[in-house]
Image 1 (cartoon, rainbow, N blue to C red):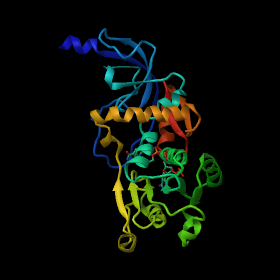
Image 2: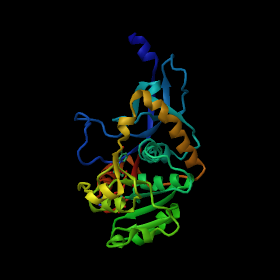
Image 3: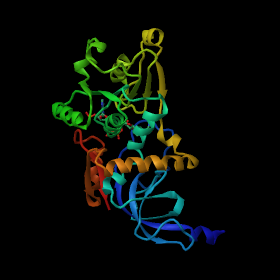
Image 4: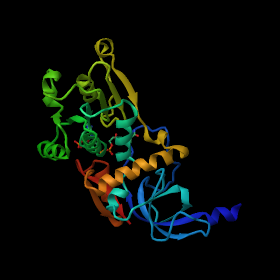
Length: 305
Ligand SMILES: NC(=O)c1ccc[n+]([C@@H]2O[C@H](COP(=O)([O-])OP(=O)(O)OC[C@H]3O[C@@H](n4cnc5c(N)ncnc54)[C@H](OP(=O)(O)O)[C@@H]3O)[C@@H](O)[C@H]2O)c1
């Protein structure tokens, strides 16, 4: 039995890993001291003789994503890896399994959206938000986007519109507004996404139509979601939550892999883009500072090994 395990293992040389910090309260914490990293892309370096689905030189990503990708080499069973095409830009391969998959699952799992529908979201500049805009567009679904007020927000608005955002407002542009009048030809959204909390979540709720659903998946402002009594009584709003890790049990991982392949095909076809910065491992401390927001709003940090 022990020998079989070794025969089935693969040695992966890691090429790129994400540097995405987790803040706030999480129900799962790695025991410290721990190796950092949760996503990444690697190249098969060598294989046990019983490994049948991988070849030396293949590119693979951890699937499900798992703690400890900041390593030069990782030894694991072959089914811990998902083989991907080498034509994919490496930085996308390294980042596809969390944020883009979250965006896709949230668009598919709560409400059946059809072409012509609309969604509303806050945190539209986040990677998840950028993916939601583009994936919604592909489904023929319009997006109403809310971003926070901050220096450079005009430039950010331009970039976000280029991704396909139909409507885009800063939080201050929405104060004391008749929300329906802002929609123009766009129908009232059935589904809303909240990754900020506080007042920003209330803005998402105000856009939702009767019987609409708001899905909370993050809490960047570290403020609770408060819902007016009238939203419940007169709009019958439903509040839901999403956590990718819960979806990524080992049996469900296999169901997610075709979704990952779909997302990677969109990347290859130039239909899914988001901003990242590649950083050599020697500068990981700068990447960490940027990722923790110590140097203002920065693109996502991806570390090259
Ligand atoms: N539940 C899940 O399964 C799941 C999966 C993936 C991600 N997430 C969560 O989703 C959220 C977005 O993740 P990401 O990696 O895509 O984010 P990201 O690219 O790092 O972007 C962070 C976003 O939050 C905004 N923001 C940061 N601090 C804020 C504050 N104090 N008030 C208002 N807005 C603030 C940023 O706005 P600026 O552009 O103005 O800086 C940006 O839009 C995070 O909360 C993350 O934990 C959850």
